[in-house]
Length: 445
Image 1 (cartoon, rainbow, N blue to C red):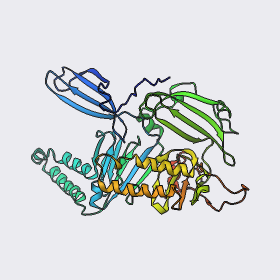
Image 2 (cartoon, rainbow, N blue to C red):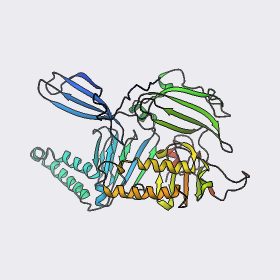
Image 3 (cartoon, rainbow, N blue to C red):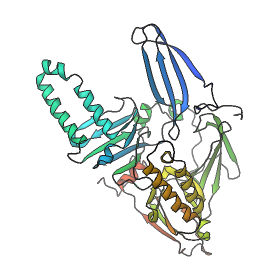
Image 4 (cartoon, one colour):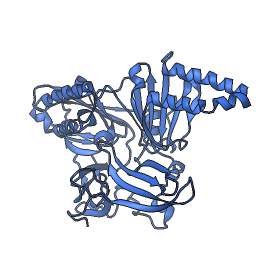
C-alpha cells in the first residue's frame, strides 16, 4: 500500500521540494575511458510527461554529456501522422519525436528510419534543417574524394531547400510504434484542417522491439483464465465482486491500487469499470472497458443537447469513440477523454476541464492560441448553462458505445437521439486490429 507520506517517483521541480532525489552512478567516460559520474533525475515536464534527465561528467578530461529519455509507459497503440505542408505556419509547427519515430517525405523519397536519431522536440522546418546539416557536414572532403557523389548530394539539398521555402506543397509522414509522437495543431481546439492522426495496433514483432511481452510469452501460467464463451466474462469478475490489484500511478508512477468491477448496463451489455486512486500525488482515474468483443458494425449517435433533461442522459463512451460538436467545430479522438460512463453534462464538463488545463492557456504560449481557447471555453460554458443548444456526435467504429433512451418505452424511438449503424472501412478495421484476423467483405482501397 502507498502511504500519504510517500513522495511520487516523478516530481515537479519546485521550491517546495528543494532536495530532489538524484541518483549517482559510476560510468565509463567514452572520451578518455576513465571513470566518470552519471547523475539521474526523475522529474516531470508540465503538460507533457515524466522524463529521466541524465547528466554525465568526467573529472579526468572534463567531458560532459546531457541526455533526456521518456520516463512513462508506451501508449497502448502506435500512431501515424500525415501533415500536408502548405503554409509558412505549417513549417513552424512543433513536433515531438521519440527514438522510434520514422520520418518520411514521399515527394523527395526521403526516409529517416526509426532508432536512427534520438528523440527531440523540434519543428517541421527543424526536421528539414537537421537533414540538410547532416548531408552537408562533410561536403568539402567529399568534393575532393568523390566529386560525383558531392554533386548528387548538392542537387538533393537544393530539393530540400525548396521544401523549406515552400516552392511546392509536400507531405510529412510520421510513424511511431510507441504512440509518443505529436504534431502541434495551430487551430486547436478545432479539427486540424491539414493534419490527420490515426492509431494502429502494434504487431507482435513491434511489441518485442519495445520490450513488451505478454504473460503467456514469458510464463506457462496465463494471467487470467479464458473467458466464458457464452458470457464473455472472466470467472473472477462476478457481478457483486470488486477485484483489486497492485499497479502504478499513471501520473507519478508511485505504487497504487486499481479496483475493477463487472457491471451490466440495462438494454446494452456488460462493462468493466476500473478506478485508480494514488495516495502519493492524489491522481484519480476512472475508466470503462467493454466486457464483450467488437461489434459487427460501427455505431454513430447524434444526441441533441438543448435542456436540463438532455444533460441527465446516461452515455457510455468507449475509448474507440470519437466525439464532436459541429456547432462549435470541435472534434476529439477517442483517447482524449478515454473510456467513461457518464452523462451528457459530464462529458461536456470533462471536455471543458481538459481544455482549461491545456498548455496553450499557460506559460509562454502565443496570445492568439490562448484567446482562441478562451473564446471556445466560454461557448462551451454557455452550453453547460443551457444558453446554447448543440448536437453531440459520438462515432464508435467498434460499436461499444451507448446512449440512454429517455422514451418511456425502450422500444419507442427517442426524438433526441439519432442512431446509425454502418459497415466499417478497411482503415477502421486496421485501427481495431481486425485485419490481422480472417475478415470478409472488406477490400484495401
